[in-house]
Structure formats: structure tokens, C-alpha cells
Image (cartoon, rainbow, N blue to C red; front, top):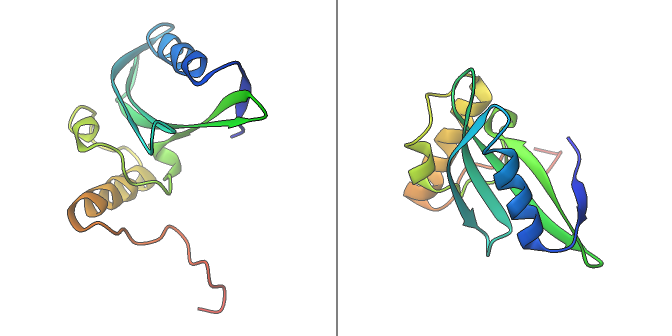
Length: 123
């Protein structure tokens, strides 16, 4: 999935995302920000199906703001999702979601998760 850009400010991105996930078959259960506001976490309830968590990575380049959506079924490599969001969504429905939530719990409990990939190809 790509990055969506063309926003004038961080607040424009946030306002658009809140609007997208508060209408059109979705209910925004809750939202939290981490990483100095660059990681926006949403707990989302679709009209049909289980609720889930999505990370929106906010970024700017040359005055242009954008976001990259990564939902929990993609197994994001960011684990600082607030625990309060985990408590508000349904049980995970995929192995990626389950593993990611386990890493989030580890990160909060022990401070350092297992890496999502091995950066050293010789190991």
C-alpha cells in the first residue's frame, strides 16, 4: 500500500482521516498518537466485520503532508500502539494481527520487542 499525500498540514491529514473513518460504513472507536504525533493509531469498527487497529504514519516532505495506512493484519513493525486501543477492539482474526498484538504487549511489558525481520542476511 502506498502513501497518500497532497495535504497542506498535519492537521489537514488528521481531519481527513477522522472524517473518512467516522462515516461511510465505519465508526471511529478511539484514536491516539505516538512518536511525537507522527504515528496516529485508530481503533475502527466497520459496518460489517470485526473491529481492528490501523496505524497511519504521517510524514511531510517539502511542505507536502501525507500518510501511509498500515492495518494490524499487515503486521506493522511499530509496536508502541497504546494498550487502551487493544482493549477496545475485537479479537484478532489473522495470524499477522495476533502476532503483532503479542509484540505490542511485549513492547509495553518489556520495552523491546523481537524484530519483525532479521537485518543481517548472514544469520
